[in-house]
Length: 124
Image (cartoon, rainbow, N blue to C red; front, side, top):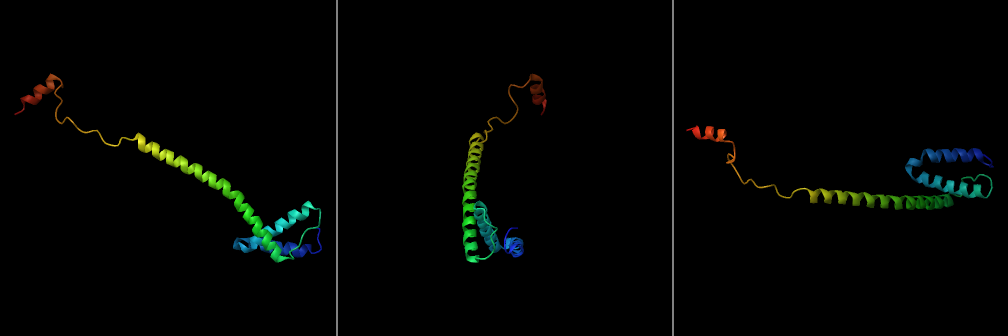
């Protein structure tokens, strides 16, 4: 690492990264990443963890931009999935019969074969 305080930067960055699950350290790490990107683009030495308020502000900006970039596809995907769900439910409801067919004829069929009728009539 090409910096005056390289060991300190690695130790602080590593500790913050390990504690990133607490979310507040993750904001500082995101701010540091922003600072690294800005310095890398300008061909300067690696930044250090010196201005904590600036790191926090830059981290909040970076997290806000990340959330905004993820929000648009998530909203669009949710809208598409909900519309597909509504269409499939409406299709299932429209195509299914609403009322069962009524039973109109109960008993033996009058057009049945004559042998069946003869057996049926011979019973007392």
